[in-house]
Length: 176
Image (cartoon, rainbow, N blue to C red):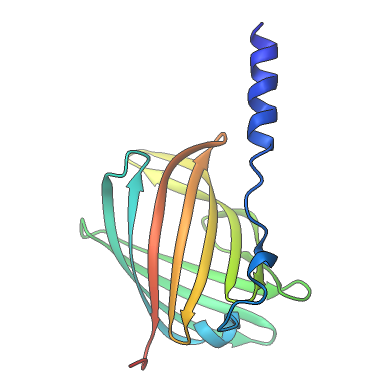
């Protein structure tokens, strides 16, 4: 009986494929990933548990540059509890609209695809919580709202179960 229940659960979870990024291919303004991030970008966000409770707020300052075809993004986070964290992404093009990337706390390689005003980005993050480090899956959706503003919503899961969500807004420096 347990095997049947697990099989049904697996089939149900596998059927939750979500939205294809190409659904947004006609949306404007068109997202040019390096065009948006090269230079300085500010971000403000929060992490919420499944219940909706806000656990942590943060600010991130992103300094990005191109190194040949690679987009190098240095992220400096300051959290509401006073803690700080940095992450350096190296993203490289992987075909039309596709990107791959690495960072020190990302397990393996991340992958993403741009279509229209949207970016769908997926990766596994080594996340320190108290005295332990957990490997959690991030499923990011970023939407360019105007030429200088982007919204990001991320689902964080482990073993297919949602742990919480990150909501984040980016604003390019010099944007009025």
